[in-house]
Length: 374
Image: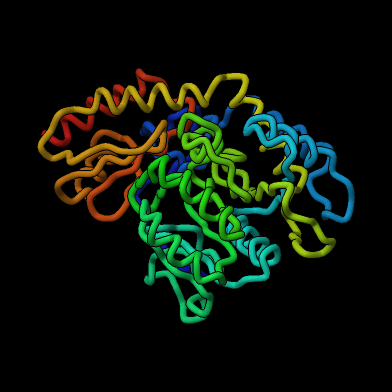
């Protein structure tokens, strides 16, 4: 038997990692500015993180959600404290797609309506509901398109209001910063307008912070730059530094009904140990502030080149858009300079480094980029 061949793989086999560095099976060291797709938040193999999971496994690794697990409540409390949402609730699952699925379901339960507004160039996951609100026909099956979804343009408040005025919209879902779509940052004014409009029309505002959350943009959640509070917030990726986890943060306006949501593996003991370690490390090491400072350093020191169109994003969620194909640049960075980066579309590479990235490490990338572009 073989693997179902759906991934384009680089010719690299990582066997060891620490902080922002990875070593392959040939002993070659790489600088990781991709973080496993924004998943590695506190650095690879952080000793406190490793110890927390190891110690938890010695106690109990798994039981279902039919019993009390005080670690879940502790995580909810700490996330609420970090995000300033003490009176909210947390529903735990296993991934970002699941988080968005459950947020969409909650918005429909709450409003009794069945249409969703999403945005062009969005990406919310690959499960049925999540992919239906993702603006990418290549990954939608006919089954996914049965959902009632309307796509609007980012930063077009008038277009959104025209749809909301029809009266059948259960929720509006938007990424804090569009990741896969090209590090597109919605304006603060647009986010504020969305908050006002959804409140005006009795529609749920869902903030997808799966990639942009957990301090990556220089605030715990990206939407906090606009000074708004949505109704539902989804998170995953950096939440447990690589251990599968997802969460929906639920505002007090929603009423929990026994059995309305559920999961087998969500909120398990190992995931809780991992997530609790991550949120403690983020706070203790000041990683939200570090993400902002190092991200600003990269933007400030980006080499001048006619091949670079622009850099956009916040904190350590950055996109460098080129005036040419990104593929050869990314491959040279990986195979010649030994630096991992991500891509978006055909002309942008994404920087989603662990939040522990230092300015010295960022300088290694900046020097390598200058050389590759030259």
